[in-house]
Amino acid sequence: LLVDCDLRRPMMHEALRIGGSPGVAEAAASGAPIHAVAVTDRLSLVPAGRASHDPVGALTSAGVIAMLEQGRAAFDWVVLDTPPA
Image 1 (cartoon, rainbow, N blue to C red):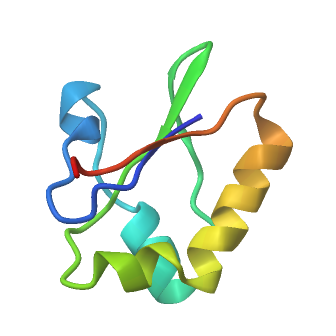
Image 2 (cartoon, one colour):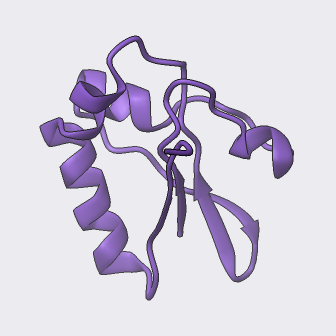
């Protein structure tokens, strides 16, 4: 599972040519579960969603933490793509 956590400039959905919403930002805002999009039979993506003005707050929200727990239970690997330092 690849999770796009770059909430300032989300781009993974463009690189993999899938829809960009709903995603991590929407999970943070609503707490609703977000379904991963199957890119191939061995790779799924959770897009970042809409760009956020408070990415740190969004990434530490209960909704995102719950989403990551669901991903951990369903996938062997969970990779978080974050913005460059």
